Length: 169
Image 1: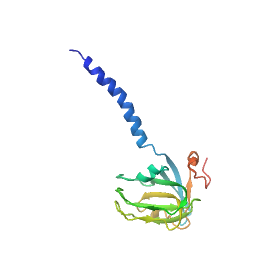
Image 2: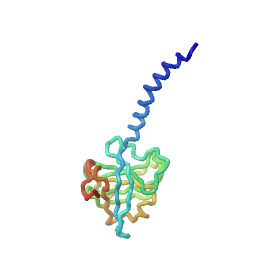
Image 3: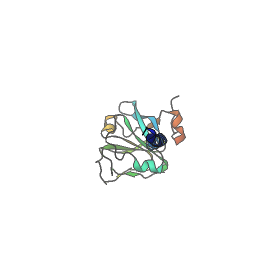
Image 4: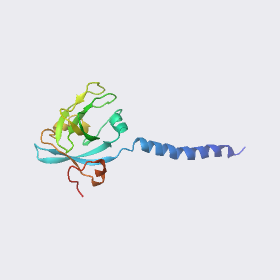
């Protein structure tokens, strides 16, 4: 008995492995973009690397089931138009700051230090089109509040409709 018995398993492995890799890539295929948030107190811009949640499915999952979110990293939720928005922390294991911005990038409101896995809702105080989730405490540390602005830094991400401010080329 030779090793011929293994050939069918190798063929299956070589067929299934690429499918697993492609499938895994699709699960983690959200785009990332570089953002800047204006700090009116320090009169400076702070860079943020944000994962984009553009589709209803991406927005529904958001940062659920994540165990960690690095400093100056977050998720930007993008909606087609301004409307009253409200978020909750169901299945979200880390405390976040939820920051709402209008369609032109102006700060609307912030829900700071949210309670992980809570069903409490955190609504915007006015209609918003963009929501930036950052690790808890970042809104305060970066002085995000009245007078703050959201700006895209990646010109190739303007396909998302975030063309309300100039991007850097």
